[in-house]
Length: 295
Image (tube, rainbow, N blue to C red):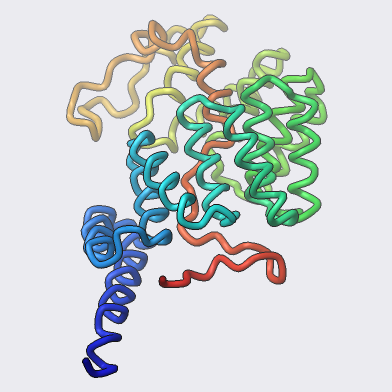
């Protein structure tokens, strides 16, 4: 067999995996999945293809399949910090914060200066109601990356839950300085201000968050509930669209949405810090290498 023919499968595999990554980064998930599976047809145990296909399934909401695929990738490459970090992300999504904490700590043992892993740790601690520990982890992430928006959000949430509302407000406003259209920070700050009696400031932030979140009911529920709570029935009933929304059904009144909105505080906390997993978030230079190695 000639050398060129021996290397042909390697070349085909790399082409398929690189194509899958390109489609994945551009949001073309269906095409990316086809390419990942085509790559795995050549190398069924390749850690990179298994890992990124797991990330894709997590982004689609199929968390159990994501756990299986990322777990298989880690069986091949158990000391991969990025895979451990993404595993923690999925474990948090399925309500296993203790496991997410353990995976984050494993990633940090391998790569201590990995801000995404520190943030995952902070959010896992938050989900366990260990708010002081979550605050400490968020500060650690910010020491590594001072402009890390997710870490500022995690810090603000942890401060809020400890009753340090002035500090929490400062942190939320820091988020909105770095990312002016950050809907979760906008909504959380608005709700917090409402609950401490700063009604107009709080309602304005809730209105802004609700106006920006296409296809999400929770911000509308929050706004409607607060408007009714403060006696603003006309505003709560007002439908600015007056027609069917993007989901193809009649937009219910804000008052009707309130019927389902009583759990808004719990939902907002559960969603705190949750964000799409970056396909190729770089690890700190000189710490560990995320570059794919085909084997």
